[in-house]
Amino acid sequence: MSGRFKRLIAAYVFACMLLVPTGAFAARIKDIATIKGIRSNQLFGYGLVIGLNGSGDKSGGFTVQGLVNMLERIGIHVDPNEVKVRNVAAVMVNATLPAFARIGKKIDVTLSSIGDAKSLEGGTLLLTPLTGVDGKVYALAQGPIAIGGFSIGGGSGSMVTKNHPTVGRITDGATVEKEIPIDIGSKEELTILLNHSDFNTASRVARVINRQYGNDMARPVDSGSLTFRVPPAFQNRVVEIIAQIGNLEVEPDTVARIIVNEKTGTVVIGENVRIQQVAIAHGNLSIEVKESASVSQPAPFAPGPGRGNAAMTDGQGTIVAPGGATVIRVLYHFPVSTQYIVAPRL
Image (cartoon, rainbow, N blue to C red; front, side, top):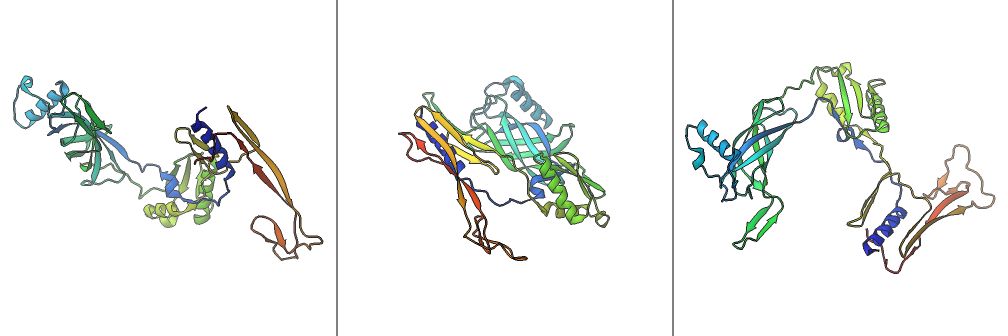
């Protein structure tokens, strides 16, 4: 049995024992939900990267064909059999067109080699039209490429490669040329979509909105969506009401979950996780979790709290004045028996 596995089990139990209930976490609605119809769109295109120092595509094929077609469009006639593409690489260009992107807005693009190029380092992307799934051009991309890796080879044939030198990025490398119309100014009803579907969260979001704008304005449809009727006072002011709803705070419900990373020995415990009596045995490792009750009794003849007087506690649930009450606390003990584990690592 490896020492890593032993430390992992000990860390898991130790983290469970240190679990302390915390206060409720409130999040803004804009952080956990979106408005239906307000979304981004994916763009893609085929382009050529030039200026490579011999690290381009070695074979011809579509790279030569694309280069020849590009030269033909600018009036240069060449023989495809005489074209060498060592300094050229064929790439696919991807971009995300955000909602409400207007003509002239700059967006980032990502390039990925589709040939046998070794690296895109030092290359420049030629003017590339980016189209949507409908085949229409929505942006044009062009510019020098920045990559997050490198590939170096020696005369003996050895090579050192870090990250992915055949994938690059151009910040603000595309310009929007066509807008996607989104009309929200005249809407009388909005659909709110939760990022993570949950019936409790949907009900709480509707309750918070109704508390702010009146009953029956928001209604959960299912675990992932709600409908909201725009109040008459906000007709033709939908942007303002969306901004106000987004800033409302709600407590999202969470699932009791434990994430264990065996490779690093990391244990992440979410909210609402509870541990009961359990015994774990693996090889010469033995962990047993027990519970015992600790009873706290009030002082003899302690009077009860008077009418209208709130009971005072010590911050842990024990009533200290006026009066008292019997409080039972559950204590957990987890002795670890092994000759290898000295201290758990988290």
